[in-house]
Amino acid sequence: MNAYSQFTPETFVEKTQERSLILLSPRLRNRNALLAWFLQTGSEAYYYALIRAVDLHTFLQELAEGLRDFDPSFGAQSVQAAERKAPPVECADALVNDLRRANPKPTYLVLDNADLLLTNPAVSREMLLAFFERLAQVLPEDLKVVINSRLLDYQMWSEIVYQGAGVVFGDDMALDEGIFNPNRRAPAHLEVYGLAAGYVFVDGKPITTWDGPLPRNLFYFFVDHPMVTRDEVFETFWPDLPTKEATNVFHVTKRKISERLGYELTQYVGGFYRPSGQLAIHYDVAHFERIIENARLNPPDDPKVWYSAIKLYRTPFLYKNDMAWVVKRREQLRLAYAEALIGIARLYRTQNDTERSIHFYLRAMREVPQREDIHRELMSLYSMRGEITKAIAQYEKLSEILRRTLGIQPSKATQAMYNKIRAGKM
Image (cartoon, rainbow, N blue to C red; front, side, top):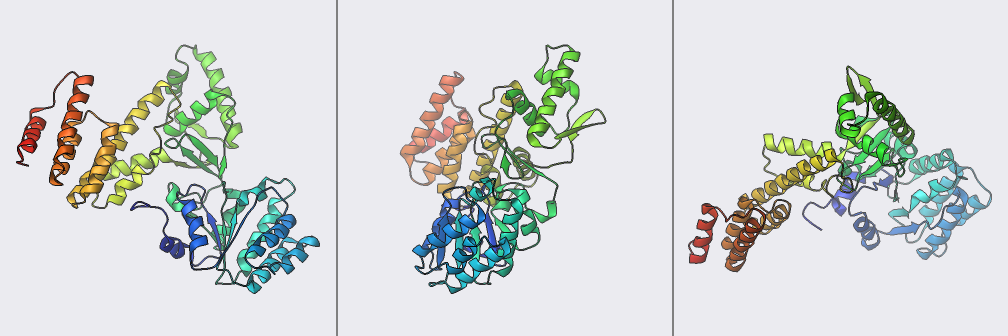
């Protein structure tokens, strides 16, 4: 795990100690490391993974049977409640009573693949909500239920979180302080990951179909351009169509976007299309660019600032899309990413952490291989570490790149450094 991993046991315990119901954010990195910790820690942890979509009572019965791997006599009250189809509140009470009597006594009950509960049409959201609300109320202070799922439905869990009965671990680490931020409550939340393969979520649920590429492309254009004129839209998407035809296609496409989202994305105000206000928009590109711009204005002395931008850049911007505006933005963002890599490399060098500095300079070099300053920094760092062979190889690599791509030699400054290194004068 690197120095800025999103999960440590200490962080998890600190952020969840005052809540009995813990939901793991699907966008949290290292969720697998967290699940492994539950099973490896000295604290007792009971683990159960759903394997199929079931109703509440079947879930309770199968849970009781599964937890007998930890306690052979577990689950008498849970099974009874399941068999007589007890109301959700009574089911929650039965499960808690069984957990109180369990031997060994668990500190955590981990429910994995929990989203399978929501995929069964026989299970109403109201039943599940009543069950988990009651569970959060009656759990003893020394016992916590951890819910892990591939999706986290905002409408399902938000009230439990906002009432203080539950907490979403990792949501604040995912993007823009997450969708469960009490200070940013909204009717709906839109998450857009242009730097992570183009994923889109509305209230935690993915948008997987767009009725063709045009609605999807126009959607991304609106998100990436929060204030844009109709003429700019037409010039980008339909430059060769007469205005009347372009207008018709535009409105049809815009309607398809609204149908997919379930909300209006934009509104027309003062000659511009702007966000409608119906959705709180969490956009990784906007977040990434804010961090970069703030770092430019106020150079940080903590590597975590640069790293917060670097970790957002998981893939090139909409890398499967070749529209002209996307290609242009992709290049802008790639250069900003390289800037972040160079920034953190320089900072590590000032802290005499040559290993990390080299690591990030090498990553920056892959993005902008023709920048001589990066190669010079690497040559200098290798020389400082006594790795003269690597320093010379770095110069030769630069020479080959410049010869092949630009037909030039390294600058006099770079050549002078190279000669000093060869002469042992660095």
